[in-house]
Length: 624
Ligand code: OXD
Ligand code: MN
Image 1 (tube, rainbow, N blue to C red):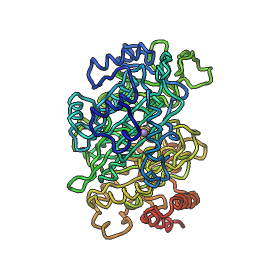
Image 2 (image 1 turned 90 degrees about the vertical axis):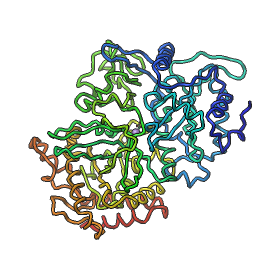
Image 3 (image 1 turned 135 degrees about the horizontal axis):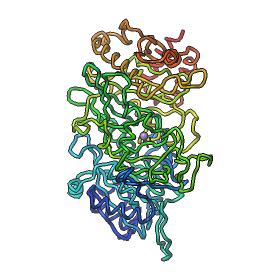
Image 4 (image 1 turned 120 degrees about the vertical axis):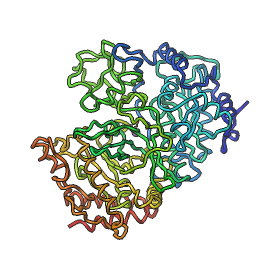
């Protein structure tokens, strides 16, 4: 059957079998294989990848059931410049996205995908985001010509034979098509041999939110290729959530149990590579506290019948940044990746184990670097790529909540926003009210990290840490947050906070030790949550937070603790002194910051919800 632009033009078929056979006719692979998470299927994929030289088996005595993959220098990170949202109008995609007309993009893609899989196997992976029977669950089918992607999808999502049956019987799904764009034969009959990491210099990561479709071409790496993650669970899902009244956010999810045995659930949104995985796996430095992991990257939230906000991690695996992870910074992650893990772009030790910058104080004297070259500490280049990653099952995490897959999710008590900023933003600030919290999310700025292409260190706005991941217009997203806030019942409204673990002291050192000590900040937040709850009635009668007579300051950054309000038991005198620099709200910096926020909002004109301007005006009123 010939596929024409009209045939695949909207609306696409929602029949799984027809879609798969249409794609087969378009991409012309040698064969088609349905993949689900079963041992013999994993073994088959693994054996093929080893034979192709894409992955190497690590020493099973040191790292059981684990592999190392190496990509190529031009395929190491998300390609935001090549990520497109194809909505009927440019406005619907918003100023935050690269927009393309869906029909134009569709015909460009049809050409690219035509014959793009020749000589290859086309894998078809039915998958569920969220436990299959949960009310949060959404289904997808990924088609890919990469066995590495297929194998990784089996860890990152849930893929079962039962789901395959459901989908072929007509359950709705997101259609996620992926090709590395490296066909082995062309139309003239010429052939080329395969390479260990096939990709294409032309990359396209395209989303059709109206059709629940993703088309990804040219990259085999991370979020570009594992389409359940950023493409589906954030970009497509955020659009679904806007339409259907729920939320898809770039957040971690943890359960914190206080020494009194009370459980709290917190979600936190930070830009990529700003410590979400570390916070998700926090080992509290204060006795009596427990932190358990539910998710490290994506959270879906919806209201229940009681008007409570419930959250769930739709993923089944971690795709975490390796560099900087160590038994000191994140022992839980180190334990999680001790087996059953695919590492990508880390260095290899002579013993057949992995290494990356920050894993140990001193680098081993000899390594093979992420490109496969001999490396010594004198080489002057990183041994592991700064955006090298591990792909591990959530179930392997020693701190995972026993009930992390509970179909009803968990009730959210607190929402944390944050960024990486050397100055201005204090260690922690509580929002005066929901609207101020939404302003905090909308005005996140952060130093750029290696997770995306671009200059590391440069400050960039990253509203809700979603700017590369939102499938619609950002001001519409702010409105969505305000509308959801209105629907949460007053006694269940989560408190909203902003944190900055990365504030620098005058000498340029970090003012806050971070990592396990972050529990001290969480302890403060929980005390604030508790005291707010006991004052809900008062709050209903006041448009500003009531003064609870605690050791807090009301500042233009929000409500911040006085230094004595943060538990510093066990801190060195230097750490106690440094806390002052960490929590400080500097009048001049905040005058500038509020001007920046004002200019930032004004940049989006009249589409900015009025509530955010009002919240900002209230903060301005707090400047001396
Ligand atoms: C990620 C990212 O991979 O945010 O999670 O870049
Ligand atoms: Mn992320």
